[in-house]
Image (cartoon, rainbow, N blue to C red):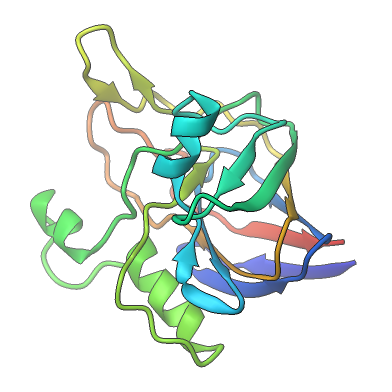
Length: 200
């Protein structure tokens, strides 16, 4: 097993070959994990929640689902979930512009920047930030269509497991969202924490 730690508010890119399994763990609980994946042979093919939910007919990823690329090819099988299905595929990766919309002045860590930095460490340049799968993220669409994020209930030690259907480069961001926005509780009130990655 290969073990990696994603620092609080940080990001990490790892290679995941066909047939291997990636386990993403929130050791302290309540920590959103923005997840991106790219074909190792063609970085223009990335994991696409929109193409996935048209096939699975669910805007939340569920154990047993196959996650598809933007070319509608199988990228990963979602094989295990101990977080009770508390995941999201609708919230775009946070970025500097989003924090400024919330009134933040000056630079703020973000999942978009974490993606760019993590990929650059492997020698890749990212010019498009795809829609991530947001594991351990508690969102709901209310009957009137309003999107809300109540307090995050994911317990310490919760995990998801993903099995690669092709050779991949995967990026996991420990979402840096730390603002106290009513109705938009992404992470624990105490702030972002680390994530653990296990490759088997």
